[in-house]
Amino acid sequence: MGAVLLGIGDGLSRRPRKRKLPKSVQEAAGKSGSTFYWPLRLLPPEKRAAMFAIYAFCRAVDDVADGPSPADAKRTALAEWRRRVEAIYAEPEEQCRPGAPLRDLAVAVKRFGLPKVELDAIIDGMLMDVDGPIRAPDLTSLSLYCRRVAGAVGLVSIRVFGRDDPQAQRFAIALGDALQMTNILRDLAEDARDSRCYLPWELLLDAGIDPSLALRDPNAVLAHVKLGEVCEALAERAEEKFREARSLLTGDIKPLAPAVAMMLLYHRLLQRLRARGWRDLNTRPRLGKVEKIGIALRSALGRPPSF
Image (tube, rainbow, N blue to C red; front, side, top):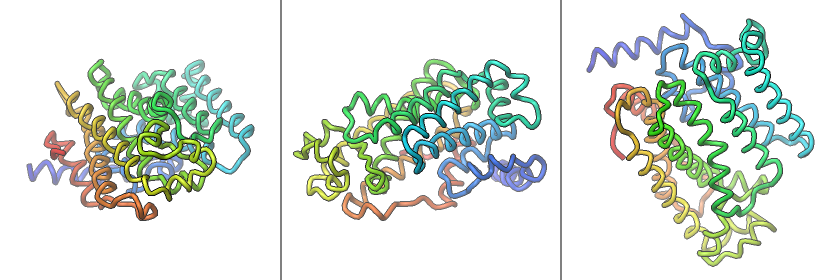
């Protein structure tokens, strides 16, 4: 085991010099502070480049949805991104040539057979934010949002990782739900500043908070004495999705090692959010670099830690 660890460590130190990632991809995904960075960093070069290209695409369309432009301008920009995706599938050879604007993504699409419907779904998810802002969605709408902005990413990712069977697909969708709900709980204050509130209508009502308050002023929801009850209810739903994802890890799970590492890292983040509580929302729990690398390595070796 020590030799394997040394070999992986040596690969980490040498691969960037042998095959440096494109600058645009490095800027989007090459930051070691990202929770996703280290699980993806351990992939073989072709898979790693494909995942960073997918991540760069997701970041680009997310930046459109979260940017300061008027809604009409955002819709226009996302329509242009949809046109670019269509061009990749309509003219694969042209889009894969050196110098093509989305060459890295086009190469990933061609090499790993990424389904167009899922890239379109990611854009559809961004449009839900643009057409909003989303405030107190019902659970059905929240589920659709999670499926588009997180489940779709999972479904293209497992293609790159090397599994696309029905069991792996169900795992990717369940994990996407868990990751997105954790993101919602982590980003409550930031979302409220953007006039958004992803806390579900039904959970607000169950806790005794008038859902219309979220429509008028998301910050007022965060100041409500019953906020903790809503957050704990959503956190428990996220826990259920983590458990579901874990139960779906059957067969050869080594190809899914990056997703397993992401699952474990995000589950720890959820645990720390619950331990912190729901009053000081501007203090965000963080995972250490050594912790991220350790979980990524153990997952890659087929020995991931338990929940």
